[in-house]
Image (cartoon, rainbow, N blue to C red; front, side, top):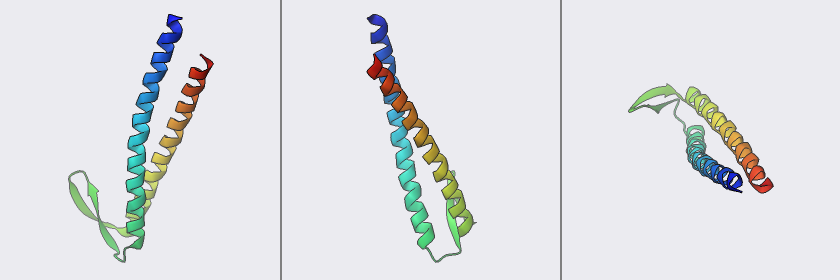
Length: 95
C-alpha cells in the first residue's frame, strides 16, 4: 500500500509541475497570438522587436515568420505536456 501511496504522491507532483509549465506556455501562446494579430494589421513595413533588454528594427514579414515559428514550437510543447498529463492521469486511475 505504501508503494501505491508513494507512486500517487510522485504522480501528483508531476501533474503539478506539468500544470505550471502548461500555464506558462499558454500565457506565452496568448501573447504570441496577440503579437501576430498586431503585426498583420500594421501598415508599417519595418517594426521593432524585443531582443533581450533592447528593441531592434526588423522587417515586418521576418518578424511575422519568427513569431509564427515560436508559436508553433510552443504549440508542440503544449501538445507534449497534454500527452504527459494524460499518461499520468491514466496511471493514477489504474492505481
